[in-house]
Amino acid sequence: MPTKADVVVIGAGAAGLFCGARIAEGGVSVLVIDHAKKPAEKVRISGGGRCNFTNIHTGPHAFLSDNPHFAKSALARYRPADFIARLDARGIGWHEKTLGQLFCDGRSGAIIDMLTGDLLAAGGQLALSTPITALDRTEDGFSIATRAGPVEARRLVVATGGLSIPKMGATGFAYDIARRFGHDVIDPRPALVPFVFEGRDKTDFASISGVSLPVRARFGDTVFDEAMLFTHRGLSGPAILQISSYWREGHPVAINLLPGNEAAAALKSAKAAHPKQSLATALESLLPKRLAGMLAARGDLPDIPRLADLSHDRIEALVRTLSDWMLKPAGTEGWRTAEVTAGGVDTAGLSSRSMESRTVPGLYFIGECVDVTGWLGGYNFQWAWASAQAAAADCREQLGGYPLTE
Image (cartoon, rainbow, N blue to C red; front, side, top):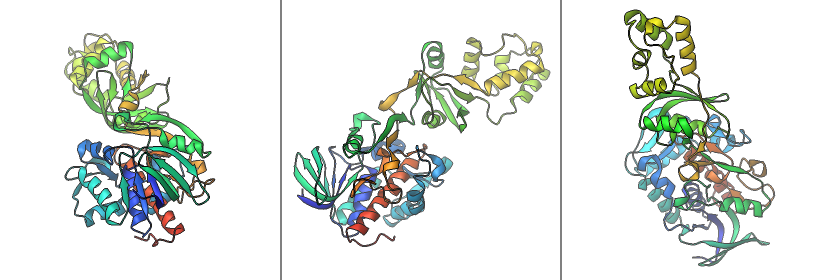
C-alpha cells in the first residue's frame, strides 16, 4: 500500500470504486481503501444477483432529500445512458425489466469486475481488509492511519455508504467523519424496507403469508402503484418498500386494494347475476381468495350472507373502504433488511456540482452516505455513479489531471 496518493477514497462499494476509476483515468494517483475483505458486496447481492444497475427513468423526482434540488446537477451530468455505454464498451450484456429497471444478463459479478478492473487498469490501487484507525486534516490535505500503515492524501472522498444491511459490514463511519469535520447529519433511517405489524394485524397478515396483489400504496401525497406481499411479520413487496422511504413512525399508510378496477360496477353486476352469492365469494374475482377470506374473517366486510341483501350504496361504501384501507405499521424490519439508508450527510454542507465540502476543502461525500435516497429499481446505483462522477471530475480538475469530458 502506498504511503501517499493524490486522492484517497474510503469505501470500495459502487460509488467508491467508480469514483476511484474515474480519478485514475485522469492520470491522478488514487487509493481506494475498505475494511471489508471483498469489494462491492451490495452490488453482488443486488437485483437477485443480477445487479439492477440503473433506471432509464432516472430524474430528480425519484429521490428523497431535505433539499430536493440537490441531486439535479450530478444526475443531469451523468445519465443512465452514460453508464450503459460503459457496459457496452466492455461487452457486458443487459436487459430492461418493468418500470425502466436495467439488469445484467449475467451475474452481478460482471459489474464488480468492471469497477475493480477499471480502477486497477488506470493505475489506481485497492486496499481491502484495511480498517482506518485515525483521520486528521493536515496543511497539505489529510492523514489517514490504517492497520496497514499511514497514508497521506491531498484529497479525501468518503464513500462508505449507510447503515443498511449491517451483516455485510455497513457502519456509520461516513457520519462520524462528517461530524468530525463539522458537518450536520440528517438522522439516518431504514428505507426501502418491509413493514412489521403487531396484534391482530400481524396474526391476520401471517395467516395469508405469500399472497400478493397489485395495489396503490399512499402516504400523504406520495403514491406507488406496484405489488404488495403479505408476510409472516407484516407487509412487503415493491409498493411497500417504496412507500416505506416516505413513511414516518406512528402514522398510518393507505392501501388501495382495488387500483384501476371498476369494483363497484363489478359487484353490482355480480349481485344482479348471482344474488345468493356471498360477498367474500364475489370479491374473489377482484382480490386473491385468501385475502377476501381474511378480510371477511376480520370484519372488514359487511356481515351480510347474500349479495341480494347489499344495497348499491353499501357496495359503493365498501369499495371506498377497500380503496383506502388504513393500516398503522408497528415499525419496519429495520437495518437488517433495509435496501438503503434515508437521511445522511446534510447536503447543505456540500457543493451540488462537485460533492465537495463547503467548509473543508478537499473533502467529498458521495453515494448512499449523502442525504439523497432513490426509489426502488436502480435509482440508488445511478446516484452512486452520478455523485462519484461529480467528485472525480472535480478532483481531476483541481489536481491537474485530464479533464473529464467523456
